[in-house]
Figure (tube, rainbow, N blue to C red):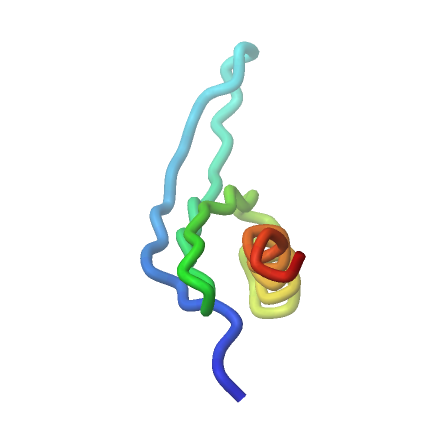
Length: 69
């Protein structure tokens, strides 16, 4: 079975909230089997082997929706 998507880049980022709290997150870039590309912003707490694949599958399904109509 062909892969549903390929991760093309991951960038760890940080920002500050208006209240001064530091927030860490990751931007994960993918390209689907149909050639659609997109980015998912994931909180650092959700960046793990259990949570991330489901989030990326959902993004890939959303990006490829136009190809299945």
